[in-house]
Length: 50
Length: 271
Image (cartoon, each protein chain N blue to C red):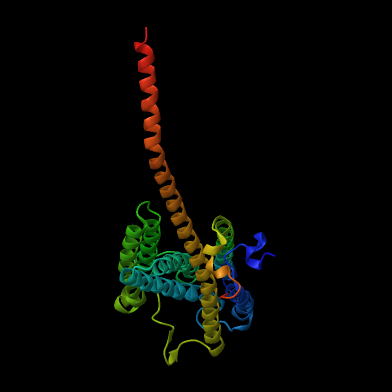
């Protein structure tokens, strides 16, 4: 396989960055949901779950 | 009894929809790794380096898509004045900036072994993409400026629309200035492709996986933006209530102070 270092670096960079960003999103969501009352978190209702 | 959403450990921005999208993304990424890194054949010109294309091209396409959504959200906000559209525009721009930066970085890593350089300032595709990234980074910075939320959203929407004008410039740069770029013209066009069947399938599959991932990210990011705006609104409401309470207390304090002064003056007069 030619240029294996560049291929691995590219894939690692993309999925590494995506993972870090995704984890940050989930963490920020957790922190904020604790600070906002239930009635203002519309998607948390069990009947209209999308 | 508390519902699932009310329990502390489940208090987050996920829902059934995002859990499905997240699961599909994970499975898709694993399958994409298998076909992209092992099963798909090497290219006759580039050899195995073609495998960088499976992450580079979807990153760039996704950035364009995210910025187009930002432009639509911005236009809809200016028309309808709905916070919903403003939040969608902001959420999409942030994801777009992430993928645009990744497209530039992977392009750079692809350029070194193929063209012999990581970066070329004279390449119009690279420079216009960098300008696009900087414009949307500026758009995000503008969204964090302190001040009236409505005015801030209005200004951001105008910038979001202006920045979108650069998307067709980036896309068409390789055609309009073909002698000033090392990039080839479109690899995949309707009814014509320079790729092998499995290579084309891998690229299309990667694009679908990235789109599912984008949908997952957009839902989460939108909900975070919604919570932030609710929190900001709540903060403003609380500050207003506090201010009103203070203004009610103020006249009572003045009366009290006046009575004390009068009593002190009377005490001084007395022999």
